[in-house]
Length: 292
Picture 1 (cartoon, helix red, strand yellow):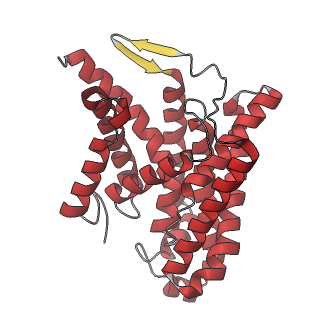
Picture 2: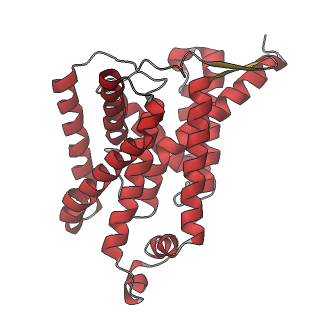
Picture 3: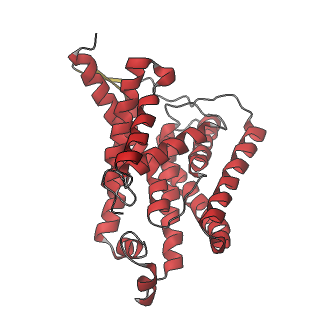
């Protein structure tokens, strides 16, 4: 029997998990919604950050959250590399060539990770995973709570960047959803540099997401595929170009996963998520808050 206490626990856990899903999806939302790059290596960007955090924590014994700046730097480097050496060199071949190049990067990272670190799962020893916060009858995972706070802070910072700074407005102006790249170029905006910056931001968000996820989730070479699929689900549910939509969609996915775990078991917890995804594609292909 599902009681009010159980529903409250599902709601709170789902919201916290949803904030993390929103951050994990933000990089794909930026690359797809702003630069129009459908990045099939997005999950592997997260994976590389997870492995970097794992080895640094185990080798030097540092708190994983202290590695967030380094994770952001690693993510930015991966984003710049992807844009400069894959996207820019294949974009003349059209969207399909870009998709295939990022898919090739994904397979390369998976294969290299398996070669270097084998296929078995690893976890990062940290104090947050053992921390439990009690609020009345609600029990909150310390790792989820801290990750949620960092996720919301980063998403809010990027939202302010877009709305309040010239650089952010230049990024939006260079997007077909919010502006027009050709008009922006005529107005003196260096569109090529703006795209590079946007992919760096996408990489930063993926890098930080990987660092946070590694504090409570297992790590192995194929786990990036799961996070890439979930990111696609969140971005499609949200609608391209909507940061608010990404937060809302992330929370919906988090709550549906928690509800699925309760109703049909942890092994099948994503069934409700994918059903909602299919239903959204059928009823509202533009997503919950999509512009086009």
